[in-house]
Length: 355
Image (cartoon, rainbow, N blue to C red; front, top):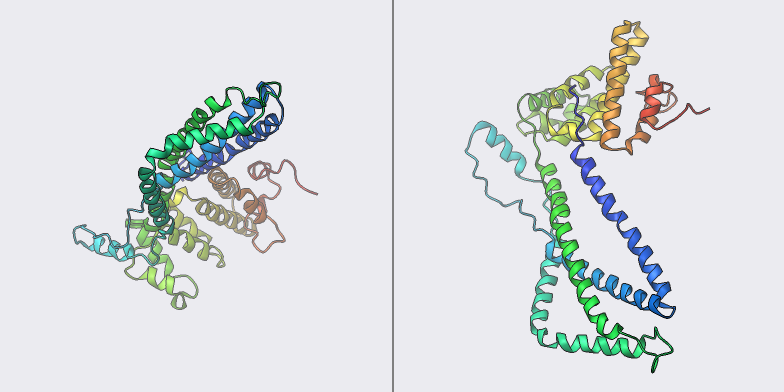
């Protein structure tokens, strides 16, 4: 197994999603503070009202920005394939005939709403000034931030409010529009790629050959399909590793297949490294039971822990799964030999052995 310290794409995407969601926390805090401030008087009340106007208009602009930026799914099922007809291309085309089509309901709603918004907006351009004037009058009549002023004066809010409203609308639209184009589009594109990612060369042959040796091969349509002319996908290769892993004494077959898949996109999946770690854990236990040499035991241990480390690096939530399969009394006890190993405890986030 070759080392790779770069951040996996899945981890990077997960980090961006978390950052985006956490961005909502300070916004909610600011909205609450602004709401409390607006109930007071003086300059703090004026600032609170302006902040609420800004956040409200920015929310509307954000919704519009998402609708306008939502990308179309370009990899349609009926896109003609112009790949030259060769033996490999012919096999690959069989996989491109997808069993499940892309759900474009959200895309259709986005198209319909944006068309309606643009159409209605163009017909109402002349009334924008009247709407802003009515909003100004609304602030003048309802907002009271300086009770000592004439008629409960709203101060400069009637003049500033419409500008804050327009600024928030434009800012919210641009922010979410750009974020959707840069982040959401990448996520959708990645989903489409995952549906079509195929194996080739030695990796594909290894998956086909191993599929024919799995117990119940003749009764499993998926395995039968793999063993024939269909090009196996990355996910099918990983699923085959899991199916083989839990057959008695087949850990070496899983390790050999992992060697073929290590240079494919499968190495970017946390499940891939989890299965390899489990296979090396089974190998370590078998060597320990049969009296294997210290070098072999050390190699199996190091490989198991290295794969466990890679699993956690891609998906930190896998710590719980690793700890689960290290339970000697559990259904899956592949990593039971390392339950008290200090390095394994660090990988799984267990600072000390539980009583």
